[in-house]
Length: 310
Image (tube, rainbow, N blue to C red):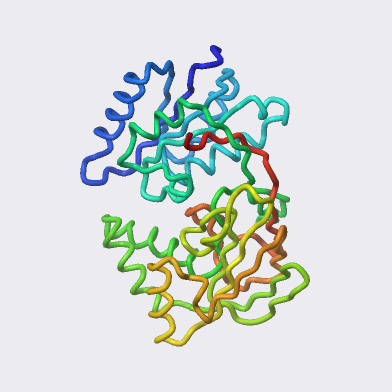
């Protein structure tokens, strides 16, 4: 494979206002304008992303660009982490945001409506080694598993909201309607969970509303986290009073989430989740199968080559 030829994986999301085809046509126009040689494949479903990324890797592409959101990027880095180190070192990953959740792209200032600028930045080929978070757990079959993430792990309330959104969307269809209805249903759900966490030398043994372990922004819950310092940021949120809940929403929207009195921030290399009773777990915006028993979340430093703005 030519060293300069890109392998592009296009991940279309559910049609939002009929813009999906137009966005891809705009991407292709920009690639042609920048005289970039590329081959592309298109995912048919969530399950096909990992298969197609593996195909691009096995066919020797050294620049793999994901036209998709956080979930597609998550699948891509998990494929790369299955490759031997010497081979992975030669591969560079890039993103053109296209989806509902593009938090990791936004961290680097890649914007959905600035495709021309994004393609120019990718062409400049400024590479930075980035960290990944890693959750190690046991599944219900008793198998020892691991899963890597770029953004964050959510335990508790936020993961519950994602699950409610998935369930309500099955019946309501529209994304916005299902999300709002999920938020309303949340009020009648369990808002706190018995947890036992070990963070640095501190132990948290109490009822907790939600925990976010962030390698990057964590969808606003770990706003100071960066994926290149070899550390994870952790936000542990205790259950607030109803008036404090609305205050928390306000601070979250204003980007001052850590200022809320119920939010307890940490910075660490490892979190041990000894117990998280009945709490669902989400990874990079997607609900994952809840681990059985204790699990650990750690950071692996500088393991992926990523294209960043020039």
